[in-house]
Each structure stands twice: as structure tokens, then as C-alpha cells.
Amino acid sequence: MASISDYLQPLMEFMASLPDRDDAKVVLVGHSYGGLGISLAMERFPEKISVGVFITAYMPNCQHPLATLIQEVSNTNSSL
Image (cartoon, rainbow, N blue to C red; front, side):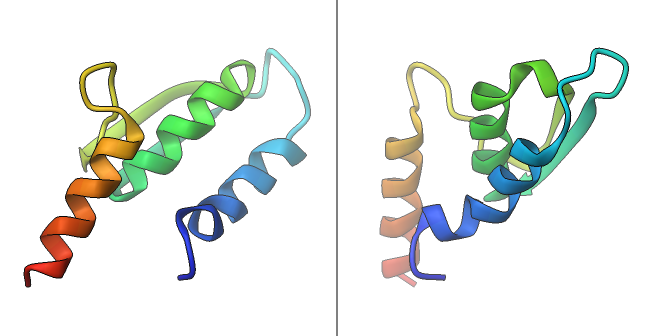
């Protein structure tokens, strides 16, 4: 994987391809690093998502934004 954008691209393309219909919304489930992807999808496509489920996943918030979580992951991985 070259970047976080490369990692998230398939999900963002899939979400963009879905029609805007009130009766057809998706349920996104993310595990671990996948929480970043579903967080971004929920922010960009709220009208297409019924619910997001975070299963031991990263969940960005105002105190721990995406950039902070990515930096923490990078620091953890570099120390292994």
C-alpha cells in the first residue's frame, strides 16, 4: 500500500457508485485500521449509510482526529 488514499480508494469509489435512495442504505463494518475508512465514508456519504459498526477499530473523534491516529500507527509500527 502506497498511502492511506490508496487504501481507501476502493471504498470511496464503491460509495460514490451507489445511488442516492432513502430505501437502500449500506451498513459499514470496520475492524482495526478499517475504522478509518468507514469514518471517512460516513463523513463523505452520510445519506448512503444506515449505520457504521466499529469492531475493535480506530474511531477518529475531535480529540483524536484521523491524522493523530495515523501518526500513532506509524510510530507503533516503526518501533516493532
